[in-house]
Length: 227
Image (cartoon, rainbow, N blue to C red):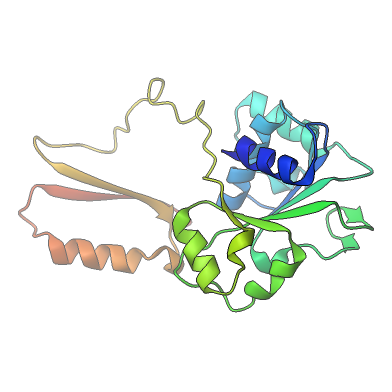
């Protein structure tokens, strides 16, 4: 889907596969950063690509091939950029001249925002940034409606699904977790998230305890980080 998304940009702007792409994202090991890694490690094989950030900006523990790809891409530099992808909250889209992790005087030919939010309404300061980009990629049709209802031009919005490392998350090479003990005929729920208010853990637990009684053959497992 990402290749198709960039292919659509190339067709609309009459670009070709040699067009140089810069991918600028959130620094630090977050969900945003993991998605960048999954996108660019595959795209490197198909187009001239540079990513922004020092080694501290990317999640550790990646497979060696992915880690090598990140190192090559982040140490590459193009004097001229055709397509700039800003993988950040809308409020952080680039102004040009750009003086951030990299420095660019003039605006590239085409600027794309990649953003998402875990709610039905955008923060109030996001919509005003849409003028800084030519189009915005969101991971779902639901977010098309959220962004549009919050003031983002519908014509700028395109769905590019989340990126997944299919080599890492491969059910044929993965050993089931021994922490989850499933009893006979038991229905198991698993929720994986960072322990913070915006993830809605209070809503999840309230709904679970309201729906199920102690003697029912059902269990909820929580796999948490930063607790």
